[in-house]
Image (cartoon, rainbow, N blue to C red; front, side, top):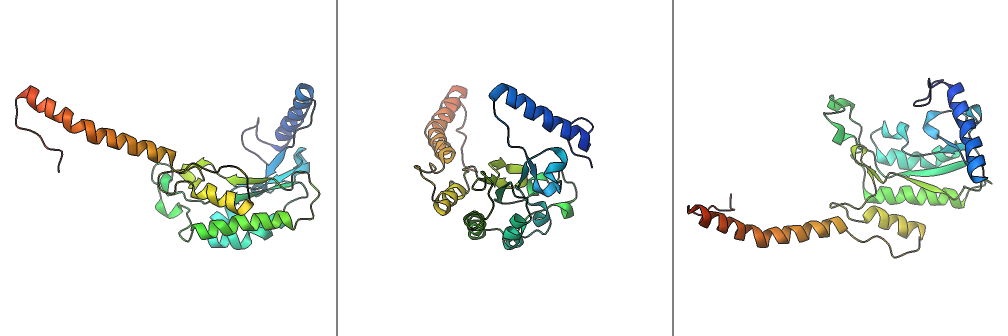
Length: 223
């Protein structure tokens, strides 16, 4: 079996890398690292010296172009994982930003036209319920990953943006009962609005000065 990015990419090279990582971490920090494999790869963690699996963007679900399908199969996907496991939530999967520069054929673009925040909330609730009802004994059984902070070319984003503000983060905080003040809604949007106001104030003055300096008929900002 071949894996990306380590030596020749075969199992022996990956196993060697995992062993080296363990020894160097132990020597530098005096602890053993937790090494997890992406569940979608279908690799038995023990075959490369890893501890368990983690889940991120479930590729098989993305292939179905349906977020509802992902949510419906989420608990079964979790249950197929090994004893040491960190669950993940796929916020969304949408490859349309990759067309046509990375995916020239539009028919090959994966996205989920049925996605909505109600289903995303269900995905968060599914992950929480799976943790609460779990019989795993792993010390990381209550860890939760979210795909992803800013995978903009795959539509996997929970980073605050102009369109949705803090909605992804607010749902996480509310459904998982997370402490803290929460997300500041749309900081970049607020900065953009401040810039727009400055342009509104200064641009007409600048245009007027240009017109007077050139002694010409005033130009207009209107189209």
